[in-house]
Image 1 (cartoon, one colour):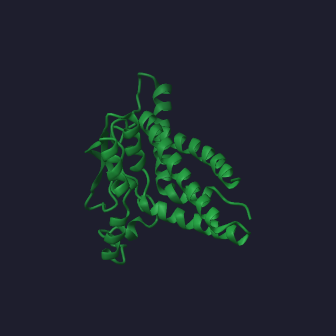
Image 2 (cartoon, one colour):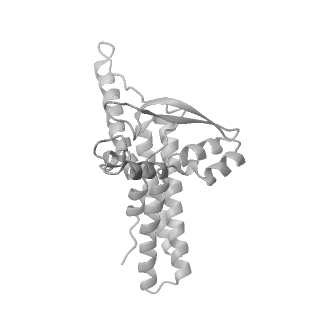
Image 3 (cartoon, helix red, strand yellow):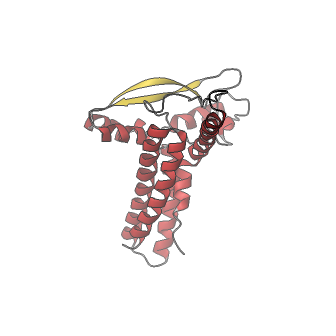
Length: 233
């Protein structure tokens, strides 16, 4: 049975990929209409915030069918206490010890910026907007790293890890050495997370949602090649 490279990628970032696709279509629509209509009637793409200066934290539940069932403020949430707990776990790599280490190594300073993006706890009667994070660092690489980590939900990593674990188990069943199978699975997961988040972050910083979608697309192609090379080890 051949290893499938697309599932870990989708489980890592699927909800935010959909959001980016919707925003990208809206952005392109406004650009095209502005060009066609000229000065007579201008359409403007209304940014949720200045994407050149900041990056909003990605969520694993936001934008999915589970959103209202996880939102403790929603009448559809069967267990508000559990909903609150799940939302607390729905953090990004930037909010982990790895993020703290990156902050120290690259001397990164962060600040909050208001956005027009609804927070997962938002309801029609009580609209709550999330805050994006603006990063400053002496190193461009540090700045990009911070933005990339803000795009990786920890739950997405966990779900992708389970899928990679199943694939590793299948490889062991087919005769692969356990240590080698586990190492290859870890490399595939790391490749998926690093390429998708980094190229998506760079694309978003330069061109907004369209750039984010393009960056993720390029990352998917590169990740496929990398994973094929890993499997040949």
